Image 1: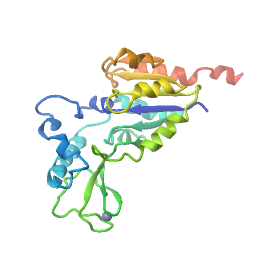
Image 2 (image 1 turned 60 degrees about the vertical axis):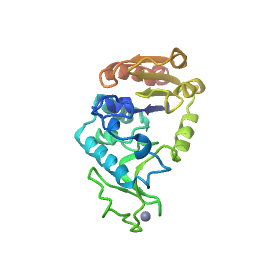
Image 3 (image 1 turned 180 degrees about the vertical axis):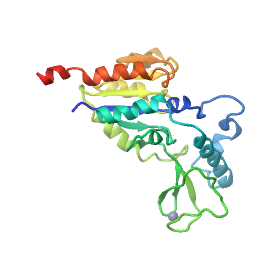
Image 4 (image 1 turned 30 degrees about the vertical axis):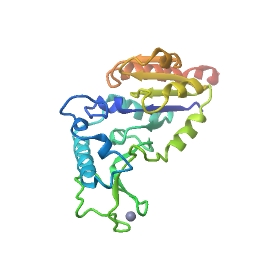
Length: 244
Ligand SMILES: [Zn+2]
């Protein structure tokens, strides 16, 4: 069966109004905190209260936004084509749109992890209280947002690379809302034998775009119908031959 993998990044959730690391504006949450202090694995325990204040505010923000048409489109691909959703996003908008088994390679904002015993648990959107919140398993205090920080290992990358390496020339890879700043999308597109689609708000370098079979520009939520038509035609191509 033909496979569809969707690799997404912050652009897809930015369309829901969620601020991203690269969102500009003085009022952006990211502008109010030094990311090197609040998202740094080497120093997070020194800045424990600040780290949790920042992540409590991110969860508060997340609770106020809703999935958009691009999230819903990915869910419909999961229903129609068994699409495999891999995301760099730590929000739960795919899940709230009805997705299941999303591979969150950079972690998950609404859960916590204990660095002492390794336990991970659902935390929801509430505020973290550094004075009272402890690991429910070992009662330890070394509790961290379950999000991959700078200088921290991203254990799910291995699984992501394994899935991408399994794509064949018959399969389809759709990359949505991510520039090449975090993941080497040009290299991924260059190496895979699959048909590739890039959907980004802004134009990437010609070098990057040339590696993709198809490129669509615009807000993912707005161009969802075009993206759907393209992916559907790619997934259903040749189906008539199979049916003969
Ligand atoms: Zn623990």
